[in-house]
Length: 348
Image (cartoon, rainbow, N blue to C red; front, side, top):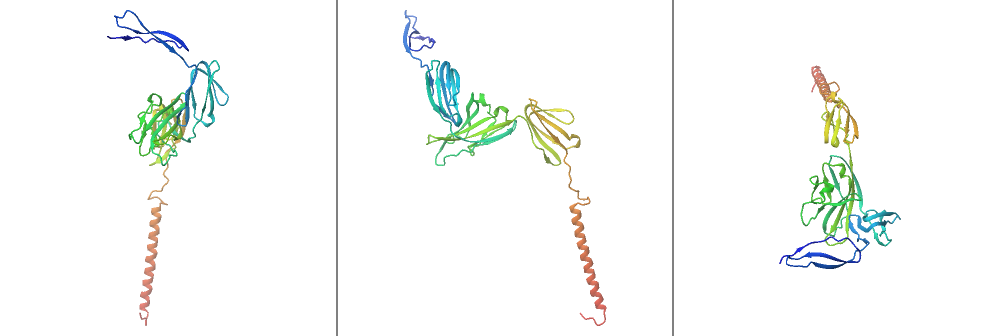
């Protein structure tokens, strides 16, 4: 005999008895089946803290018109639930999760102290983030986990490396960080990651969390990545040309001295090798933010080999002069000896 089930959604009600028609029987059955369910809804919850990177994470559930009281005596409105994220020592302390009736649950949250660093790179460029945590020497590392933090609502684990499982880097939450195809990792340098084709949305705080195989505690390191929206590298001389790179990201432009503009999608190499191309160049991103530089042909001040003052000519003249002096002195000595031989009574 086949039975079909109908699941009925019931509104929340605290501590009430509900008679719910949850089963319609076979067509041969002439009566419905009812279940009596005693259901109790907890009116306030405060999840146990979950440690991710240097942060302690939890959720405060209050229903409508609740409040969250923070250690600095501030009160935040909670309509349903609120994520609690404590990532800085200054935010550590007692938090109270209270419903509309004033009933509260309290927890103590404490952020971990991670060493920090800062890296700044240009949009459309590449960056190497070298995390430098204090790894426990006598403990086997189980995993390296990277966490992406752009604020209260954007806090996600985005990559993980498990040296005893695979040499590959595993990535997560592509819809949030969009790093797939732009993030690279060398298993021989397990704490370093490389990101190519930087975007302004990549600007964030990045945490590295290291877990151990036989040790419950963990260590980590923070790097704040700052992505500059437009960059114009300092020019360098290459074979008489002034060479630089304009970084704008997508839909940028390069303004050149002839009042023309060139489209820049990401970055563009700029070379000035002719005097006619010298002048002011402006590197501008899609938001209209520009950086300007004066680029001109590099004048070669090195004397040519056949020019007066050339080191080659001077050296040659000195050598010729030394040889001439030597020849004159030798001729003088020989002439002197010859004349003495001609003197009567001279004996060698």
